[in-house]
Image (cartoon, rainbow, N blue to C red; front, side, top):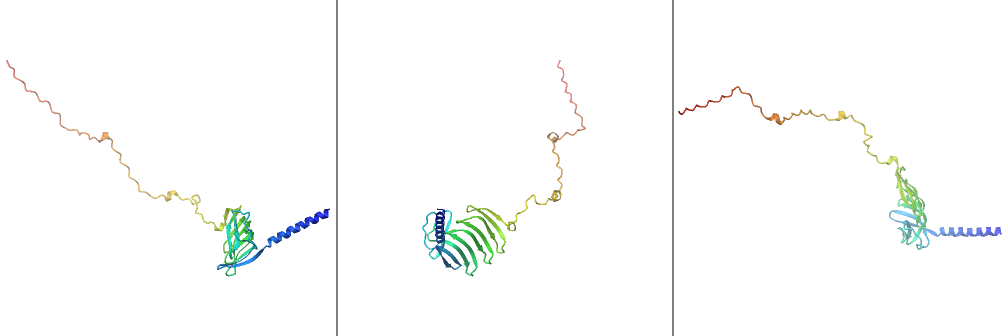
Length: 222
């Protein structure tokens, strides 16, 4: 009885693994050439109608000999598998992976000189973790931290941070006495005369006061 259960369990698991492998290999490779690039990508063999979608995610799909991306849904064969894009000079531009129309895993982009430009990690159509940015010299310029598909923090490398102006606290102290401009001496103000002293005083004179003249006597009438 135990051997029979083990056989049934192995048979079921084997069948599930076979169906899973068949599902993931149900795609084919296409090569698209444009005036700017050459794209090598895998797509589904048949168009699957949208059932459960996420409006916050962008789906990549193939139709009318071109690749499209739309938010929340699709209307063609979803990209599924490895993705490679080259320039017309056959230089590698970008590589990554799609999982039923959604970006998944590690994505790398390159500068025209072959140096890495960005490294981004995706999980079912949403960026997560650290996204690193490099210049053409291969130097790390900044790092963006993603959580729940949104950029939460950006760290700029110390070498590429903008130079800030020195604050007042950091400025050297100067001798205020030396720096003060020389000013001419101000003449003293004349005191104002009070109203009591404004009236002119009478000068004393040497003239004596005149004596009163005697009145003329009247004659007696007898």
